[in-house]
Image (tube, rainbow over all chains, first blue to last red; front, top):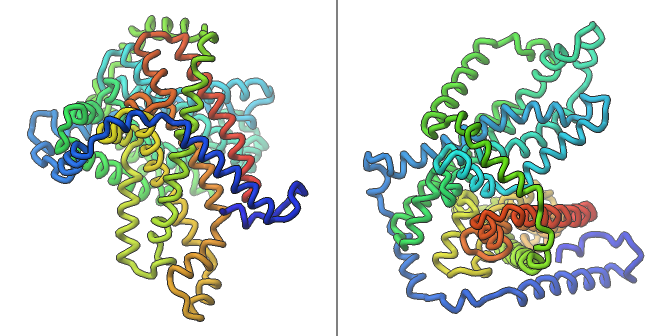
Length: 269
Length: 259
């Protein structure tokens, strides 16, 4: 496969050909091991006629669900989902900045502090959003706010890490210039660092808002609001026409937000 | 950096952006019924969670190894299947290969749609159609991989050197021959790198698929959360953390050698 083009750098194999064969054998063995060990018993219940029925339902979306003025229709729920994503990313952006300031190697003389900051961000990122959602549903009760908090806390870890990388990689010349004329730490932060970092931070936040819209549409599975709950109910009830229209709605919304975000991010650069 | 790039210039534009953002935050806080006092009130829940969470039940580890291995197997198989489907589709989604705007636009559109469906919704849908089990997880991961990898591949193909393509065209090669002999050799090592990158993402994603019945460690994560066994949840998350870190490390090492 692809490994053929990589030159043999180690003397482990006699020729490039031997190396290619060895790698192919390993890859095939790993794939085969994965394929054989899985449990296919679920497939026994697979019913072609049910699957066909699902496909037929998916191809005839229930357009009546798009808007019926009840507040439980597709458009209101999609707006709610986008609201969850926006609030979550807003919380994360605001809170990620102090995290990033603590985690940035270049801002501290003490090497321990940034390491602790990075560790906290790593831990925050380690939890899947769904786990946060389950916890926050317990804390603030089921509803969209729990979803926003879940996205917020998860993205503090994501954005904190990305912001830190940007701060550590930034051009230090303006900072030195401010320090040279007697500016203190905060002045160098506001007059030299932030102007340079703002466009990148905004771009990263926007990108995470796009990601958050995708997440927000799934958090309803655990009662954290948004379009996910009606979707899972429709799937369980095998109400494929509704499933279909919700999926179309999610795809269109995600698509539109991605386009919008992409356009704004291009201007930020 | 020029002085005109500092915050003092264009302040009216900045003010406008800030106002719009504040309006959006207020609007989103209103629709989501945000009440930050609730977070404080719910504090005991958080401390109760953290208390149990901080005492991981390490005796649970042996029970977790098998589901974890299954999760990795699901990821391997799903990644490979998705990748195998993604390569030809991504080739068809570039004008470099097809020289046909319409064909390319159609395939791009299909891939864009596939990419926008969130992972967990895809899993829920697959479980409903195919049935509960690991096989649904494999299908979900395959479709997810298709979305992620195809974009990376067609973006790479668009940057290839046109020389070999022109040379092949000049001697009358067909489009398929050009794809195989002029384009593929140029992008092979990057493609392999994307395969490992996708595997990394998939291991991370596959850990929650069990929530909707698509097999793997997510099933146990879900039941532990449901039973409020946070001491187990913490062991599971620790395990996911370690496995993801190991996979990241291995895959990065492989990718560095491929680059």
